[in-house]
Image 1 (cartoon, rainbow, N blue to C red):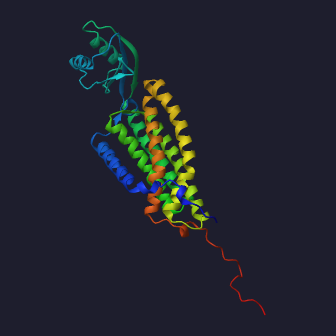
Image 2: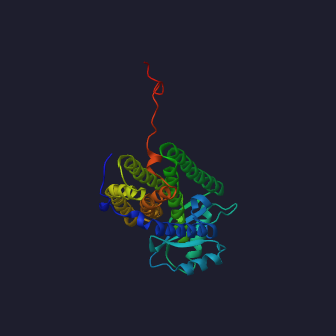
Length: 313
């Protein structure tokens, strides 16, 4: 056991109540958006035809929507893709119509006014495949959370386990809420990023909880708030270095990786940020609110065999 000067520790827990309030508001907003707006499912999940076209000059999206609507494609989703000259068009599945024929019809509609339009690519996903991917993707996320729940329940005292799981749920809901609120397309690459966020957040939370548990056992005097602040201060340099190096890589993917990986980089960038935040203010604050104390973390003494017997005269 040892004594520490807690004055040198950063008082993270001083802001735990306002931070928890902010987290609660963000989670409520995310859940509301997910219920009302839902997610902007990509072609991988919805099925249909994806067409990428290129214009010589900046494309007028409203004119493109009008042209497609006049050609019986009123349900087409039109958006820029990477630059103002590149346009991505998503069309729901058409019974009995091949993707190639849909592409030819769309291209003919866009060229009807004499505008020069180039076909960049065309992709097709059947509705059955999209439905299967949706089910499998949701199942993968659910299985990952259940496995993590079992792991932290075995690894930590139950208060830390609940804090760790709360941090994971917090990170997933906020990441999904970001895509719902800003209507960013959610495809398989984004789902992979969300699963990666779960792993990153869990790793960061375990490091923090391990240090808190270790200090509860080593430090002789100190209130739970002081010990948690000391533990967070000790792991701060590791957390900052890990987060910054990860963010630098993700920033390069975000700006240079191209439009296809843009959603993946967005989800991971936001996930790394909220994962670092939740390790400090969600996992630790939940454990503290549940009344974690030194007695809860001290190893139980094992009574030796015959220790209670009276000595022989």
